Amino acid sequence: MPAQRSERPAPAVRPARPAVKARIWAWARLAAGVGVLAVLVWRLGSGPFLEGLRGVDATAIALAFGIGVVTTVACAYRWALVARALGVRLPMREAVGAYYRAQFLNTTLPGGVVGDVHRAVRHGKDIGDVALGVRAVVVERMAGFVVTIALSVVALAVLPSPVRGHMPLAVAALAVVALAAYLIKGRIKIRTGLSHAGTGIGVVLTTAAVLAGHLITFLVAARTAGATAPLHLLAPLTLLALLAMALPCNIAGWGPREGVAAWAFGAAGLTSAQGVATAVVFGVLALVASLPGAVVLVLRWADRRRAAEKPVMLEHELPDSGVHRRPETSHG
Image (cartoon, rainbow, N blue to C red):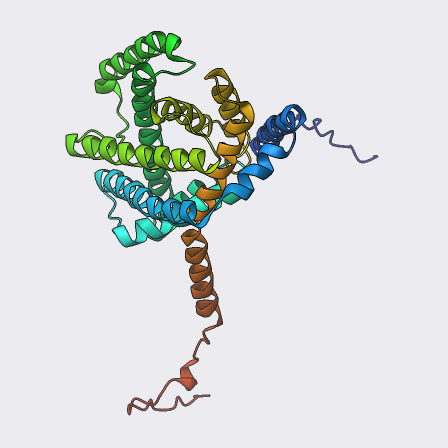
């Protein structure tokens, strides 16, 4: 009899893998950032970008570096607070080094979040629980983002800016969101790490310090770029540019920041070119402030290389301790 063939069912069509979707989304965000910069160059030319780069001087660099130390320590302390609330011990020395490294990666790599991902995974491996390490970083970043938005909305509602007329609606929406979060707080079973009052206050204070540091750095960038407008006018414009940096479609922070700065400066009666030049100077100063992170990266790489090259001593190579084992005899 002829052998019967076993008919196999046709393979099912597999859906697109999450990795492919993530790659597509990453390229889309990169393209959006490139698109914003391309439109600015098309409309304003390369002059504002070059003027911003030429305007950076030693005084601005020194101020940015000093302010960066304060803001980085504040961010690291906020991370340590959240980690402790989640039951994870995080020494400040390690937190500051890891945060500097994350900032450097965020400032030099597309997307603006690569450093935070690396910080979360690295810390998770160090404590033996990657999920908990990632959770601590996500909660810390989200808490900082929410507080930053709230403080910025309040400031923009008080100071004169192109968006001041829309601020009552923004404040009302923020109040509704805060009320909804308070009402459902008791139903959320996932611990966020912010339930303790001391942690919440610490997060608000450290985030306020970070926002103030970034605001001062942006004002230094504006003065370096030649902006002579009063500070009460420049402050809300810089806040708008800082908020634009939170958009995920950027190239290491570049793109939306320059676009919003061009629009805000133009809408406030200044020039769009001056807004772009200010944003460019801020980008350079942010890179300078994050340079200690490059040192941390090099030191960690050197430590890993030394550990990998350290020879593994075999048993017969161990130093003689004075105790000799009796040689085994074979019975046969």
